[in-house]
Image (cartoon, rainbow, N blue to C red; front, top):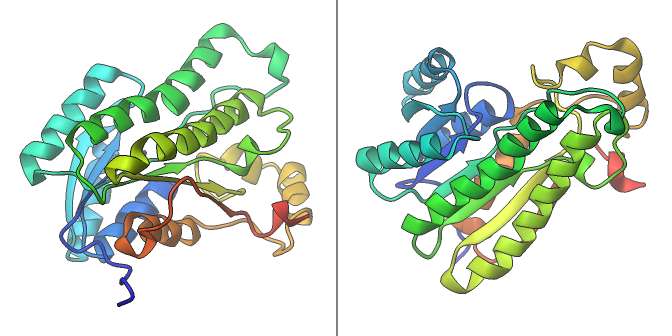
Length: 252
């Protein structure tokens, strides 16, 4: 029997969930039947996101958390477990990109912050997730095509996304024997507030469009479906996979 793309009865924790790709994944997961735990740094934005999901009939728990702070991540998982019991899926989406410029020009505080959120955060969250997960659980990491190509002016961000892709593959091998799947999505340029420095720069934006066969930027909801699929039993034989969703940029 073919498995349905459903998250009914499952609890999914999504970081960076107050807007953009994270919010789109949370909304799609809730629509697929999941209880969703929304995490990001600011409670007010999370409350708005959770309210919108509830208005559509979903179940959402908003918890403020800085994913680069291990003590806050531990508290997040404790809160989610107290509310819903087992967490069945984790989406590591939270990211930061505080520096835009030549790689050798980045200052240490900006570099440390990028690594703290983009690499240390997903690793810490994955550790807490696996500590309570059973077979059939799924981790989805939101990486970037920047982690697979040269990334002038975004070198530190791209380095962390390359690291996240490596983390995905390694954890897939290490966790596969206990039935936990680990996959990643590598989006191209998606129209979000996070990408506003690129989207709102006419020259840079047009450069991306010109290199994209579909001749446009992506939208957050065009990434969300892949995450729901990876989290569901329909993807039960998929692990260690990096799904590129970039409008064809990397096709040649």
